Image 1 (cartoon, helix red, strand yellow):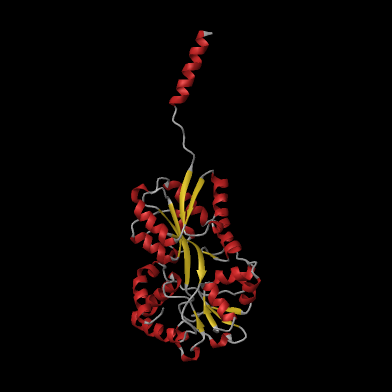
Image 2: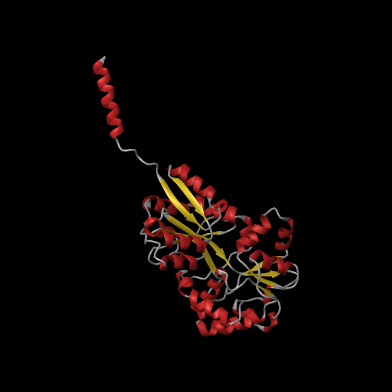
Length: 339
């Protein structure tokens, strides 16, 4: 009896001495709203057993938080919208370069950082949207054509502080140079129907209400309005059509949501694993089905709403240039009087 007790005691001590294995996890800072990412994260956990601890917030606020936390940050992966913001994160020194054969194989070169600091997850286009009862598609051609005097008082767009517009102008600087882009911007601003205000949905609603004939907006906003539950937004969206500009030359401007692994990631391998999952077939199809965004990968089926807008040629510019030319674009827009 005493021997049995001694054996049990020894076993208990042995068990206590064994290291406790921590649960597999990855910590994600996301500028995307929880509803737009959480279902995918749950699928990742179900498939891998790796728990995802999610923190959401505004893109710029999360970047400042990462900088403030430095090497003590709990974050392993950063998801944000717009290549310009991803470039800011790289320049701020909060990301690390990743060499993943699977990421490099499936994410087209123009949608990832050349040195592997970030990778695109979903694609959003920023075309021209026109009111079908007041504009014919044959009247439209390119972003450059919107500087033509025939569009005076007919264009709605949000402010120059918006990163999507900054990236659009940055793409034009990359294609045409700063001088020509500034000349365009001054004439474009002179054609605005009203001082810029509101978000992309507000531009579409303003066009539908007769305040302008043309709106510049990201397609996923139009998709959300068409498929959402708000009758007034759906009615407004049904009054406009999508025109893909610059099909005769460089193609329509596109941008991404994307992600990068944090420089001081404690769970680096799981961060890479999650990043690879987010560009997998299931995730790529989900972006279109739920968020009305285009897959960043070629060959992924898209929902009917997106098909209805037709196929288009997208700008092949490496999106890292959107960040590189961001400061120049902001200064240019200010000189052009773009409020």
